[in-house]
Image (cartoon, rainbow, N blue to C red; front, side, top):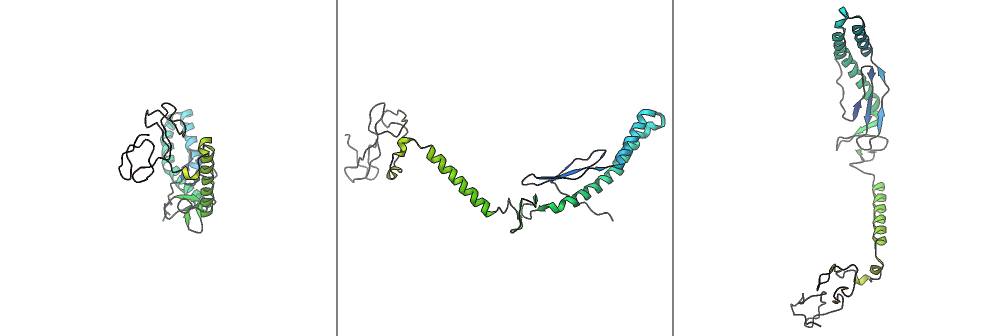
Length: 217
């Protein structure tokens, strides 16, 4: 009884009428393994019959139909056998992850300790190193993008609200200024509520803590 062919989706069929060849690839990294080209006997017979039909005519006019039958029967049988042989040769180089069912190469994409592909179970050392590198890059960008005037701010001022526009004339503020360059309105200052002593936000008309009206300076 013929053995069923184990099917795998991680391959490309490069076969032609002349012979058979397959390429198996890793679903994670894309690494490919291509089998050696195996000539097809039925393909050669088909080519000979096609040539005879074109040259001699007459009785050989039926050669094209014979050729198709040869291809559809003998060629398909040979194709299945070639695929089975190719997969048996390539299978030891691949691993099917029991979690995601992906076929991955054993050389780079299998976490042998976990018995899973590295997409499902990444190497912790690699992930930690990558996380540290990403963090370093983020810090570099954060510091390199800092304007000189912002560098002068003390650590205690980082929680201070930075306004994007003047509360009086609504002019856009290009820097973290103390006064509006358009109307001169004071933007910063240690203003406090005369009633409860809470710090007042720039431009506030009422205290956010007790509701006391802020007197104009």
